[in-house]
Image (cartoon, rainbow, N blue to C red):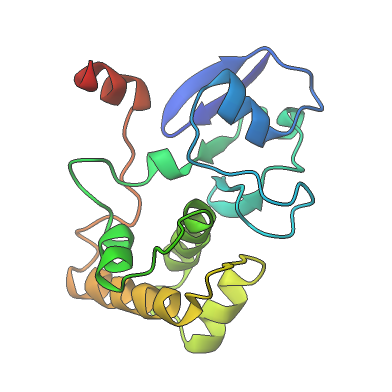
Amino acid sequence: MINFELNGQPVQVAADSDTPLLWVIRDHLKLKGSKFGCGMGLCGACSMLVDGESTRTCILPIAAVQGRSITTIEGIGNKNLLSTLQAAWIDASVPQCGYCQSGQLISATALLSKNSNPSDSDIDAGMSGNICRCGTYPNIKKAIKQAAKNMRQDNNSTQAVAYFDPVAAREEVQ
């Protein structure tokens, strides 16, 4: 059994220790927001926060997350309250096809948690390895800068990451 925290909640999973975290989250825990892209950790579609760091989970074995904190796209904001970053993402018209969005948002969240006023080069470095086949990079940069500005103006009263319980959210829908 592997024990870890998922989106602020403790979980226990029975899976082969070499199973990639992405597949455990998608297949065992039924959270489908993180995507499979390349399977080699190169595109960023599978990114999740592991102890606050953007991590490619298609190549991360579940055994490596024992006792750690994992945040998926489902753990950022919720249907009733978008995170500051998600709101800026929408305002900047970032989403096109949407496939890369969960990984892009995860990496941007990690960046903003460490740097409240990122320069263009900071954003380029923080988002490096997240591929957007629609080419919305200028809008992504605009959204990150706007979210950073909004967070600074709010004196961080609006969280970059708002955790919620996906099980409770499902129960509300039913």
